[in-house]
Image (cartoon, rainbow, N blue to C red):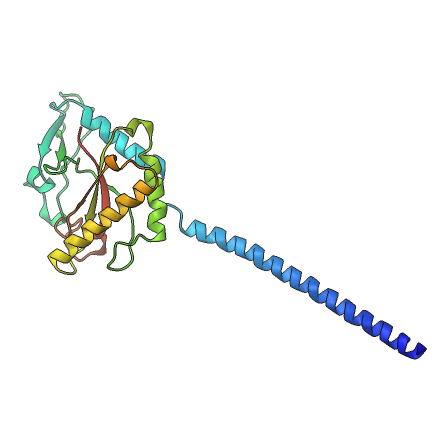
Length: 239
């Protein structure tokens, strides 16, 4: 019996020690996994940082609003129509709708500068200097990606600026040239609506948003099938 106690005692101790050591190893491993998980989460968040800031959004539209409120004169002209209609002599090889040359809107009338032309869409009354929302969608759908939602949260914060409280925005959907005219028209409308609905869910007043889809009729670049033509833009409604 004594011999058994002498042998079993150390054996049990070894088992106990081994079990304790295993628990320690498992706890350490669990801690490592939690810590690694935390770092992984941070990395994921960083990968999904907004492409632009709320401040950039508000500055863009506040400057545009200031320019739109200036009285029409020698340093600013007002053109109701598309960019191409307002700039018929523009270089078509630049692709898409040709931008009208803009000069300093605060320039004195005596300065030898080309007058700034503010282009306003005849249908939506939107000033044709859009802010690209840089939203991405799942293939051939109007489902917003996670990255798109991150950007739109910044956009919603930006237009919440008190100086833009009364501003109304047009959300435009555009596609590339792949697919039929009707298909792309419907897709662009659905995507613009998806963006609008998400912004409303973030607290943006529905009465501040208008949506329109242009399908593949208003490409940003000459190659109609270029992916950069797949976009959603927001434009300030002319007051």
